[in-house]
Each structure stands twice: as C-alpha cells, then as structure tokens.
Length: 227
Length: 227
Image 1 (cartoon, one colour):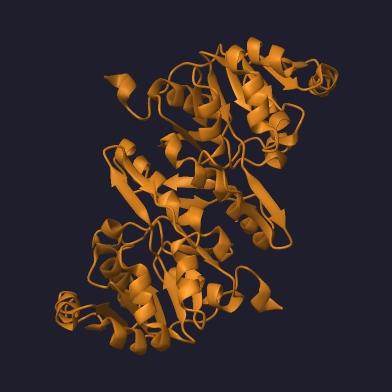
Image 2 (cartoon, helix red, strand yellow; image 1 turned 135 degrees about the horizontal axis):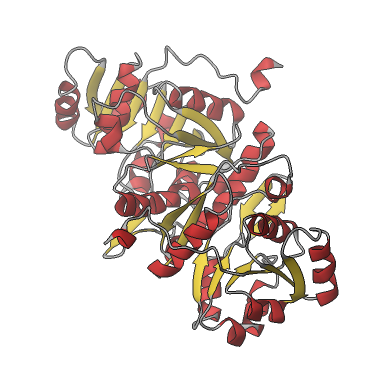
C-alpha cells in the first residue's frame, strides 16, 4: 500500500502544535517555523504571562498564542516537549492526564557541560524519550528535533534549514506524523531513525555536534545519505 | 597558525596501515580503500594463514599482505581495530606492548541484535574506544569509521563513498592524522567529532543507521552540515 512507503507522509496541515517550554530558545525556534508553515501554535510555560509575552513577540502575522503548560498541552493536537532536562520528568508527570491519547514529541537532550564542553548525562530510563514514554503510558511518545539549532530556527535570514530530523518511536502512525511535521520546515526531511530504545544516542549526539560547532565555528546538523 | 585550522590536514601518504580483524567485512572494506589510495596495508587475523588468504584475494595490484594480529600490529604505522566486540578487550590487552606509542583507530560498534533489530550494548568504560584507551594507556586511541558500510567499501561499482567519518579523540595530532586517513577514501571527509568521552553515542548510532537501512532499503551514512 502506498502509505507504507517510507517516503509517503500523512497530511498534517491542519494540526495545531503546543510547545511546552515554549519560551526557551529551542521552543521559540520550533514555534516560529511551525507558525511560518501555517500551523496554529500554542506556547506553553509555567507562567501564562511569560508565555503570552513570548507569543506576542512573534507579531500579529504569525498564529502563535501563549498559555500555561497544562492549558497549552490540552489545546495542541500534537505536543512538543522542549523543556530543560532538569524538571523534565516532573513536568510530564503533572500533565499525564491531559497528554493521554496525544502524540508527544520529546526533543530534550540530557547533557552536562564542563570546561571540556558538553557530554551525555546518564538517564535511568535510557533516554529522555524513554523517560517520557514511561511517565506517559497513555501517550504516543516520539523523539525528534534533537539536533536542530535554535539559532538557525530563529534566524530570519535562514530560509531553508540544512539538516534531517531523525524521528524515533515505536508507533508507525505517530512517527509518520512527526516526520511530516519536520518536513514542514523548509529544507528539512523527517527520517525514521529507529525505536525509542535507540533514542539515547540520538539525544547524546547533540554533545558531538556542540564539539563540531566549537571546532568549525558552525551550526552543524546531520544529513542521512543514500535515502 | 595554518595547522590549527580544522580544514588543514597532515600529509599521511606514506603511512602503512594495519587492520586487526582484517579478514572480516569491515576490515577488508577499509583495507581495500586504503590500498586503493596507495597505502601499504597489513591485514591482521588470529590466524596468519587466513590473513594471507584474505590478502591474496585483493590480487597482486593492491599492496595488501596478511600476518597474525601481533605481527600486523607491529608492522603498521597506524593500527585500525575492526574486530568483533566480543573479544575486543582481550585482543587489545594481548597487544598492549606492541601498540605502545602508536595511533590505534577503534571502529568497533558494541551492538546487540534481536527481532526488533539492533541496539546499543552497555559498555563498562562507556564505549569501545574508551575501553581501548583504558587497556592501552601508552597508545593514542582514536574512534572513527563507525558508520561506513562494509558493503559499500567492498563494492567495485562505488567509486565515491557518500558520508563523513566522525573522528573522536583527546589528542589533536592523532585525530588530525585519522581525519586525513578518512579523506583518502574518495568522497569521504574526516570530521572532528569530539572527545573519547562522547564516543559511545557515535558507536551506538550505528544501530539507528541499521534501522534506517531496513526501513529505506539503503546503506545509510551521515553527513555533517554547515561545515
């Protein structure tokens, strides 16, 4: 069947997208690109006031509004988790009910930093995405958008973003939806990257890209070759 | 200084390369490409006889010979470790003396396989490359060549290999040498990818590329963008 081809993607045009941690750089960057693609975007924050202020900065032309995290999670067809690793588990636990049945896209990278740069933190469940899946048994958890630079997403000079988004998950329909959402960002392909049990190394690879950025003065991403 | 630019690489033309585990697919693939680039290559194997037989298969036109692992390690200016993960530590322990002072390039991916595909194995030292560094304190250990498909390396139809090799290590001169060796394979760039403490995720990402290969019927690799 055509929908089983890895290159055919569902139509996601009408989906609204909530971004938890939507006042941070990564959250605002993704929000901006999804809004530019025509999606209704709801920024979530612990403080509704800050969420509203961050949404207002996008201007009246972009369909972005701000709510507290719980109301944002309730409002989005798809919910992107872009919060700091510190507090990740607690936030998701507090939203278990409202996130039930939804696609939850985790893009959190559990990293530490010291004088030598970034390094991957150990995660009891294996990865941030697996922690989300453990905390949210009734949600469909997908890992994606780990390597995409907030600086690039927020840069009005960057029309096309030169990287592939690896999309990880155990449910085919959910990963296909998120692959289609990734492709809403010009230049980006959403590539299936494996099951959640293989999410750790995708999250942790962000530490390597930070090393690349330092050495080469770049905003590095990855492309998958031969597909 | 020019040699500090990330794009300037040392001249590695005259270096001989030993490949331990040189009778396996990955080892033979790398050996073939290095020999095509004009390097003297020494295949190492537990059995000198099998090493000689594998070397003979390359034909008289390519400068490849076979020795037992210890003699191969002694003969190579640079030593590539392409053995199975099972037995990795024991082999390196047995070669500690002969590998002292040399650049040792570990390209081993500690992976397990089950019905759902490949997954990363836990490694006490963090990664195969870190295990090599722990076992070989007098060697200069570099991690590289994790994602390059043996099928592609061995395919006479593939003139250019479409991927970047991430090169990891704690010693700049060694990673630069290995970056230059990677670039001896047409199409390949050798990109500095961080310190050894960030090697695990690069090794483990091979599991994701195997998932990509299954889904997309490909021999996937990665390219680093914006550099």
